[in-house]
Length: 77
Image 1 (cartoon, helix red, strand yellow):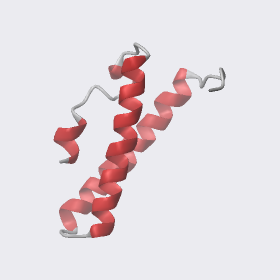
Image 2 (cartoon, helix red, strand yellow):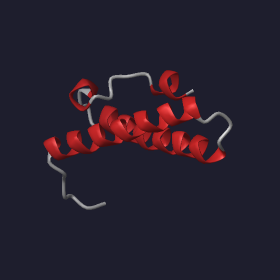
Image 3 (cartoon, one colour):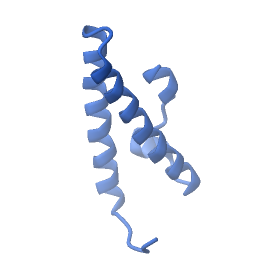
Image 4 (cartoon, helix red, strand yellow):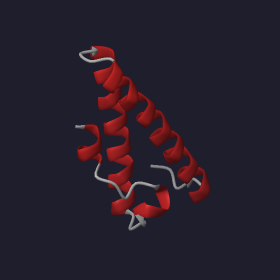
């Protein structure tokens, strides 16, 4: 793996955007019951955010600085 790093502020912005988009999809899920497409989007956002959350924890980062100090399972399922 490359030793290049991403600026913390940039990563925070990326996570913020992912959370915004995930919330839009969760709103869609409430409106469009039984949509396989929307269910797939929900699963995808969950997996991406869960992966980032795990990597940040492993790196010893404070999840609250990234807006990821949340229970993703509770929100998505």
